[in-house]
Length: 177
Image (cartoon, rainbow, N blue to C red; front, top):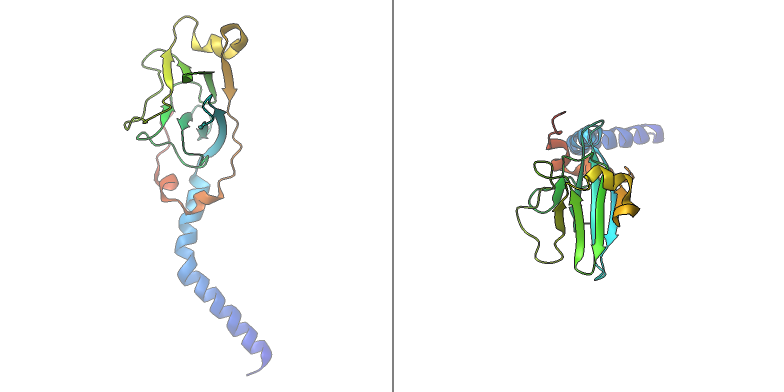
């Protein structure tokens, strides 16, 4: 057998291997990537030295969600069992204050509050304060006046790992308001 024929056979065998073995994995991965949302992550350092992570997930206009979590993975979709989730605000900003007792998060009154995880955190739980006066949006616009921090979470995560995660492709997008 000549050298060019051997090279062609090796290339054909490699392509056949990729088609049989890697294609199902690749199709699922590309579906995840193409249908996935965009992510952003920022951290908040608490007075005890620990970190909490604020993750923004966006499916486009008017479908943003912010979650507060201990998991530093900025590409993972929020989990109602473990994360504090704010789906009712504008989806890109968080108003908070770090105190000696931990993290205080400000939110609008119910029904627009931050949803707490179904499995409570054992320690360093954030305190959620629903505020009517001043209104949450006033705190966003004038944080220095209310001695709070307004954090705008940009979509800054590159989530190549999501090519291989089932949960990101299977998760439904939030309904448009």
